[in-house]
Length: 273
Ligand SMILES: NC(=O)c1ccc[n+]([C@@H]2O[C@H](COP(=O)([O-])OP(=O)(O)OC[C@H]3O[C@@H](n4cnc5c(N)ncnc54)[C@H](O)[C@@H]3O)[C@@H](O)[C@H]2O)c1
Image (cartoon, rainbow, N blue to C red; front, side, top):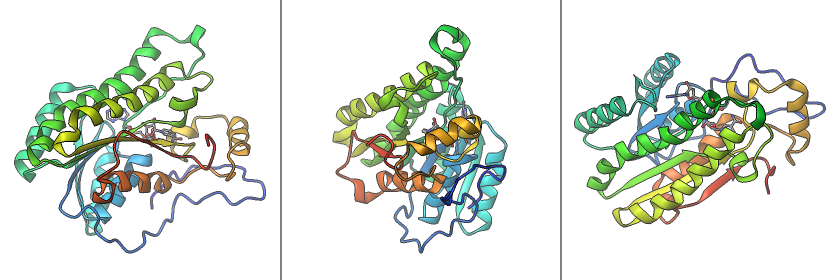
C-alpha cells in the first residue's frame, strides 16, 4: 500500500510497522455493489480506506480538496477497483448536496458515508486564535454535519446505510494543545450516538473510529522527540499503519456490523485502554 514515503521514526529495538508494502489478503467482497463516499480520501487513513473498500467490492467516491485524490482514484481503477475523485471541501454545503444528488442519479444509491476528512491547528488555549478554533470546527465538526445531512435522505430511501466518522483517542481523553481538535472529536462521538437514535428505524447505523497515533502527514508534523515519547506510552510500542485503522472502518461499514450502532471503536495499540 502507498504510504508516506518521507516517514522516518527512530524505533529503538522495535520494528515500526511498514506503511508502504501492505499486501491485502484475499478479498471476500464484503462491500460488493455498495456505493461509498470517503471524505479526505486522497491520502493517509482515507486513502487506505478507499483502497480497502474498493478491494472489497465497493465503488468509492473520494471527496477531497487535494488533487492527490485523483491519483488515488486512478490507482484503484488501474488495479481492478472502481473509484471517482471529486474536488470538494466538506465545508462547501452546496457542492456536497449537488454531488450527493449526482452520485445517486448516476449510481442509483448511496450506501456508505465515511466522514474521515480532518485537520489540526494545534496551540494551547491561551494562545489559540479564533481562526485556529473556527477552521478546525468548520472541517472536523460542521463538515461531518454537512456531509451526513446531504447523504442520509438517499440511505433512508434504500432502508440501509452506514455512517462512520473519524473521532480520535484525544476526543475521549483530551490532549495538550488541542482544545479545538479534541472538542470536534468528542463532538462526532456524540453525533453518532444521536444519529443512532434518529436513523436506527431506517436501517442506518452511525458509529465512530477513534484511531490512535497513525503514520500519516498529520502526525508527521509532531516533533520527533515528542513522537518517541508517545510511542513509549503505547503498550504495543508502535504507531499504527493506516491500514490498521481502515480495517475498523471496513467492519463498521459492512453487513456484519448490522447490530452495531452508536459506538466509538478505539484502535490505538492499547494507548487509551
Ligand atoms: N493520523 C492520526 O494519528 C489520527 C489519529 C486520530 C484521528 N485521526 C483522524 O483521522 C482522519 C484522517 O487523518 P489522517 O491522519 O489521514 O490525516 P491526513 O492529513 O493525512 O489526511 C486528511 C485528508 O483530509 C483532507 N481534507 C482536509 N480538509 C478537508 C476539507 N475541508 N474537505 C475535504 N477534505 C479535506 C486532506 O486533504 C487529506 O487528504 C482525520 O479526521 C483525523 O483527525 C488521525
